[in-house]
Image: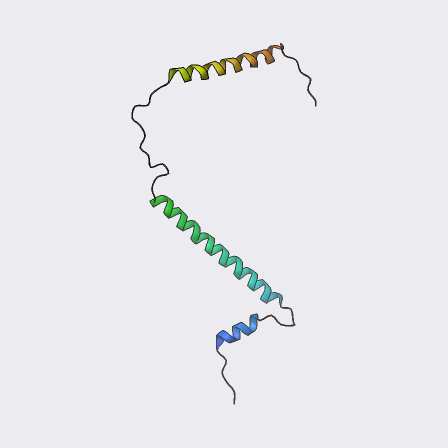
Length: 102
């Protein structure tokens, strides 16, 4: 008496690792794993895209309408850039000399 083997069992028997090497089976498994990882990656990226598009903004605080300008801070920043510019001119004019190690 012969029993019929379901097709799923035949498939499992084909990919079962035995004493013989089967490059076709091994490549099929590798390509299947890569394909599954690719599909999972695409699904994850679609999920993240739609959650970012439909989600709240990054900053939920409302900006102030009348920002107060601190002139003292602006003056300090301007002074810093003027000092840097003066130093740059000293290098360009040759007042500062240095030896190039290269």
